[in-house]
Length: 78
Image 1: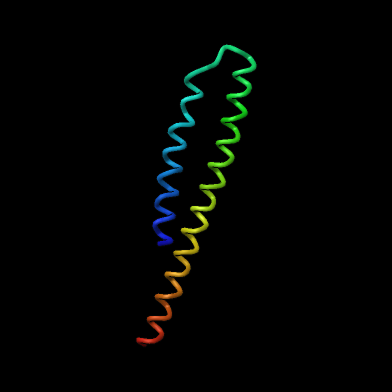
Image 2: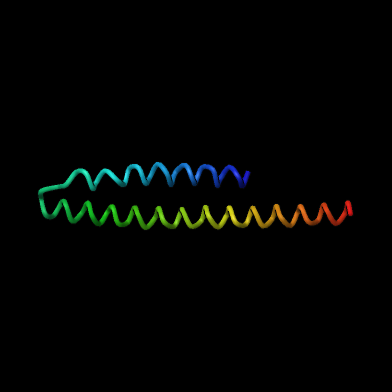
């Protein structure tokens, strides 16, 4: 279940990064619209970075939990 969250989060990060590349290719000529687009892109990038950090943290926690579980199993078997 937790691993499913991490996989979905990573897939979402990849898709968002792909989408966020488009504003660099399409430049708005109207100054107000350009500033709004840049603001919205900045907000989206900040949210994306938070999601990316959460996914990385969750992955590290899962790895640590798996390592602890493996050590417990070895201790019981040993």
